[in-house]
Image 1 (tube, helix red, strand yellow):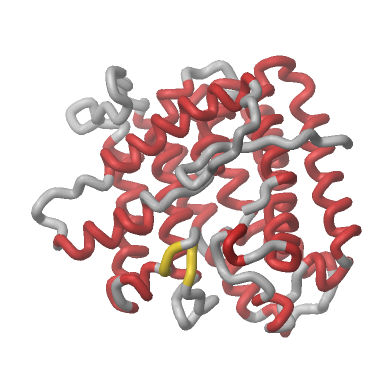
Image 2: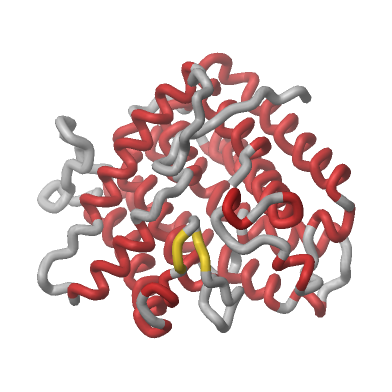
Length: 327
């Protein structure tokens, strides 16, 4: 599969590439997402000032917003209005941000730099970083729950009044997100990753780790978008499978960037996995074969999206970006 160069602009991007049509829509959606995250992180006087500041430092840091973009794209592809999925999109970004804060802690990956800035526990302190993660996890489910209550649902897009979700849709999203973030999903994958030396050094071990540590949230991003749009059970199953393939390709690319990228380019310390002898795709298969595996996963994702025709344009663009990203 020949994949053209693509870009998603972030606050740190200085690319001069002419955007493709899907990228123009993505820029609009990123604006919604950024506003929504800022809106939902205005916590009022009951939240200690230092905690609110640290939450915003972690949640609003310049990022690609891949997971919330996938949620909005899946919702629209399945026939829904993308803005109706914004609470779900913001909730999954909160879970992702909390996972990064906790992953960076000394007891986990022990990283000092994230997205080109000091990690939360370096900028503030260890205890505050733990509380930031705890708060973001709780806030994600608060946002989803309040999205179903007409008296508490709040517009998070300037100039647009987003109606409340139905209780059933909100409850299904809560169930999916909690499952993806918990011991059978992201947390379980992280635990296996910490104990990877006890697992056989083989592809099955890598997939066991990363289909939960990385893939679960990415797949749930798509599935929640489908739930908000009213997708059928069969469509939701296809979205989950698509998300698993995209998630695994994302992780392989992440492993490759640790080997081939620079700290300035990637925004975090590189070469760390190889220095620690960590089980990764490049360490097991080499750089070229790892890249081929990622290409094959994105090719399969493209094939599963073909049946949606032009409605899949944005998801295909995001899949291409995941394969070709440089940070």
